[in-house]
View 1 (cartoon, rainbow, N blue to C red):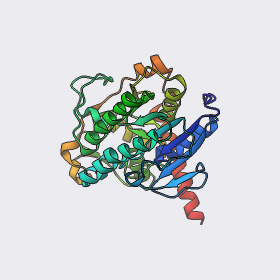
View 2 (view 1 turned 60 degrees about the horizontal axis):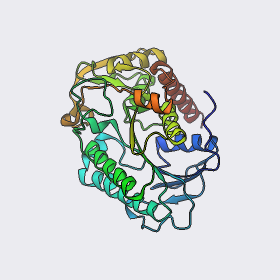
View 3 (view 1 turned 45 degrees about the vertical axis):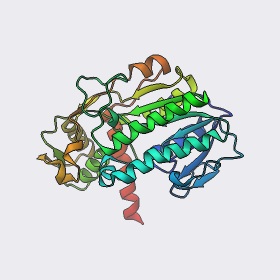
View 4 (view 1 turned 180 degrees about the vertical axis):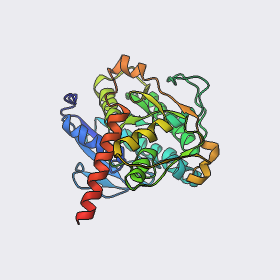
Length: 321
């Protein structure tokens, strides 16, 4: 990978810092020279940035960050996953919308730092045309997507009222080592390594732009360094769009096993509400490329290979203990 862009001397607060994306981003920010502070509902994991705030973002008072010098707030904290969000829509909105309002209120008390908000491609719902650009109408089909769209408006309002620079990034189907096992790539990898069938909804021909976590982090750093026009929104997507059936075949090939694909399942059989299902989600990241210099570097095959390697190593370590 190329050397990270320089953020030397930049003071950054990352909310949701103990999560899958937050841990990858925290390491990359540190490597780029930033001083990183983490905030999460969970305690600081090993190797996490210091200082660290353990708090629910819905509970932080407006003056929670008083006394800190902050240049940037990267706001990641949210209910994770469409399925988890659909199980409790009220809590989802509370965490994503009310939590974002709290984070922005705290930012106002430390001099209106730059805010980068990590939204979601779920805000688009089922797009009428592909690929999806930032101008595609927002038609979220899930409580998660609707809450993310509402939080985007709060971030935009913060920028207008404070004059601070704000950026929204909409990632597409992020995956990588360390992701929770209920997401599609780690679920397929885990089952393939165990010789279990890979469950696929419908015919498996659903198109997705899968984004390796390092590519997303690359996009976030580019947005912090290059700084596009004020209030800009960017799609950040992976190198190629593939079907879910393609993904399953790649996983089987990379694990070297004989796992079988079981297609034709109903979303409910996998614990997913049918009304939130999206047939095709293909990203255009041209704006990010043009304005930020972002280009995804990790193919789906290479990314899956890394997830397989990490999961196999983790299982070998667990057996040895």
